[in-house]
Amino acid sequence: MTRTWSAPSVLVGTSAGALTVAALAGLAGKDAGAAAEEVVSRWESVRTDEVVALPSSALVATAAYLGDLAGVPSGLRRTLGLPDRVTRLLDADRLRPVVDRVVDWDWLHHAIARGPVDAVGVAATSAGTGGTVVFVERGPGVPLPPYDAGRDIRYVDTRLTTEHLLASAAVPVLFAPRRVDGDWYVDGGVRMNTPLKPALRLGADRLGVVATTPAVPVPEGSRPPDRVPDVYAIAALTLRIVLGAGVTEDLRTLRAVNDLVERGADARHSRIPTWFAGPPADRSDELAQLAAEIRRREYGGLAALRNPSLAVLERLVGGAVPDVVATDGAELLSFLFFDPAFATAAAALGAAHASSAVAPDSAVHAVGT
Figure 1 (cartoon, helix red, strand yellow):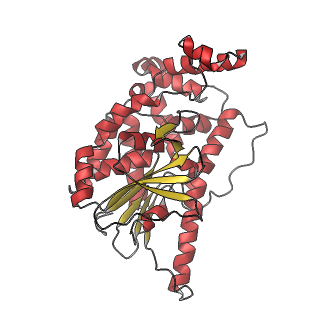
Figure 2 (figure 1 turned 90 degrees about the horizontal axis):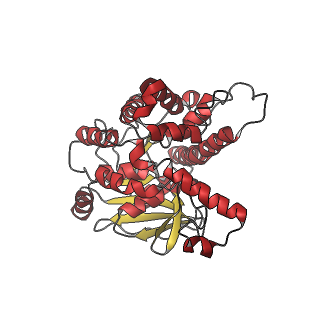
């Protein structure tokens, strides 16, 4: 990107993208190519068993669910040292040291306070209001955007921490909501997977968009299955809609406004050059297929013993059931597949998407992930 444009100075991310933009901000000032390679290298050092405590997480969730079925009061369960409610399937606290290994917090704060980074925003969804909250650490001269009533986006001035990133990546049901400043938050992708508007509100006049879903609707595929879709298929579909619909709609709106500006029909806005790096619409399941391929190649047969947490996780999302559609389980697995081989392959896939993207004709000042 920087071979055509300048390095981004405003970085805004959601969910896994929040962790990545924080990592990039912590490498600001370095050569862009070297910084990208370093981010990939840090993700390559993470394994599933560092992030997901299985089977202990499953046992805790099962115990809480059985308590619900039996009608045991929450207070009694707490007295007995048992989980009082089902709040998650997996334990996100194990992610804390991983985040701190991926993000150089000292340099992130320095880069924002003294440049070259103007602002870093992390989007999460408020469990209390259902709206989007963007936690912003900003440099001198960058104003905090006001509340956006039209999109229900609230901006909170803060010094970013690991807790903000965990809140942004708290995938509902899988991970428990995270508490930040008295409120509970879940994954920002529930409302806003690609935070284009916050990047613009923070001063960006050009956008580089990095996504794992296409920029346009997926074309009609093969005929529907003969039997009723199972829970794995519906869960995969739900995630696809949550993560993809916002990208498609926001980019469609942005391109419509750009078209009006270019034709002289809209004097209120300026044209926003946008570079999109993501899968083409006819290959929207590439990441899921890649997860399935790496799983078979690296952990097939007895090799599964090298990463038992991954084997249990695959069964949890239906990826190991013989007659389940492989792509559904693999799509769910890809969200929690922390593995060196998968990180390397996924980064290569992203680079391929970026290299085939059509660059606009101006420099960039922001990246939305």
